[in-house]
Length: 567
Image 1 (tube, rainbow, N blue to C red):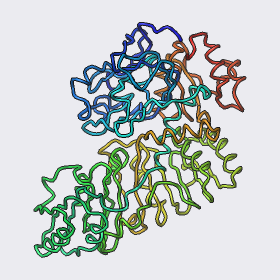
Image 2 (image 1 turned 120 degrees about the horizontal axis):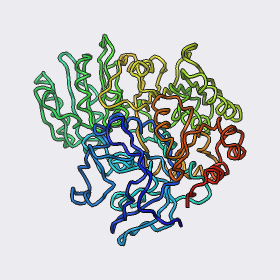
Image 3 (image 1 turned 90 degrees about the vertical axis):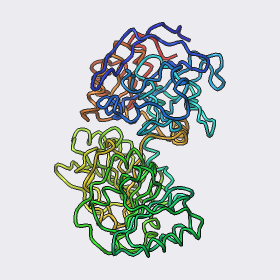
Image 4 (image 1 turned 90 degrees about the horizontal axis):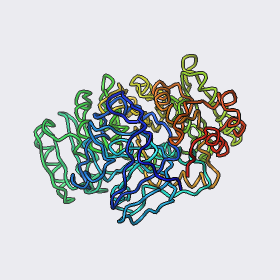
């Protein structure tokens, strides 16, 4: 094992859009409950650039409000909320090199895939996360605390053990692949949240229908109503009371706490009202719109940032029954047989993974239309995706949307570009019973003008996902170690610490045709695309597999760079 130095190279985010590369950041000694890891490799994610632009205002850079006390958090030197400088990077392969005296679940020498989302530790707008309010992997060593990195419910480790066989790059890139996996592995709630809070808002002249069926199937603990007609108030209170649900009436939605309801049911067709009501939907909440045969008259500004980060769901009906919207919620986000998939922004790093995942999921009849505006990146995507599709008897096409628009109706539309106008186009592409996934990293508060009337008419289900869970990590790790998934297929470029700024710029500008892998132990190496390797590092290029990154290429890179190797 390499001796641990007292200082290290690190890429520190010190203010909005300000990355400082330092060679003398102190390497912390682990306290009693802490673990020190050496970073073997880490990928650059578009989310890193969002943190770079937002810095302290990013919801995952906020102070932790749950689980650990302020005094306990103060004992962790890598906890850096708010304006404190942080180290980005969350797609990491790490190795434990030192542990504190009270550490129980980790030992020196452990090699691990890093699960980054600390969903048990909430901030004001999200949850704590490695590479955000806890320092991440764009440094040679990182400190983590065992009180943070053990799941309190399952007891599972956030440092997921991996074997010595995969390359460090392949392990680090499991994190973005796991985020893509989460988009399909979601379990969708098809009823009211049992024991939750439900809000029912009824406009004048609307008929209350279907609420009784929903309550009888899954009763909330509390029902809040905003109904102008006293007779309707009595009807709803009676049916709710019969199921033992506490009922409260409010004169208006003004004053109701934002994000405080698990289910919001709206009987009406007022776009302004819908735009107000969406703020009341809580984390993982469902918004059910019942138009009662009326028309909306204009697009509705939907907070697609909350769909992405807060996992809010939009359903409803052009008819009269609130139960109809829940009836066509799918059991999961998984692809279905004969799925027609359209991926907007398909040639970027995450779009690339969506395409490969769809084509290799083993689901019969899937067809994929990959849409982008970068011809070079589309060609790179097609060079990988077309053979995968052909080998499986599936249909694949790559479209430059500047020259050709996707045709027909799709049963799954994934939007991976955080542009409201593109988000608005998804409803027109969606067919009957389609799923629209806002996977793109829209910031919370960013809205897109969606044709909700058309969405409800076609029974389209709107979802969003962000991050991954331990189960997703383990699922893709299992595929990697079984040889059915090669995450290195998405590697576009490699770099040491000298190329971090260039890598972040390439990802921010969307000029990268795939993932960029950083090797923090290679301090002097700049950014090199795989296409440039034959000219710049021929000994490394010789170890590629038909132009793709491999473990042999990784080993050759470390030897050629002449610096210390991942232990």
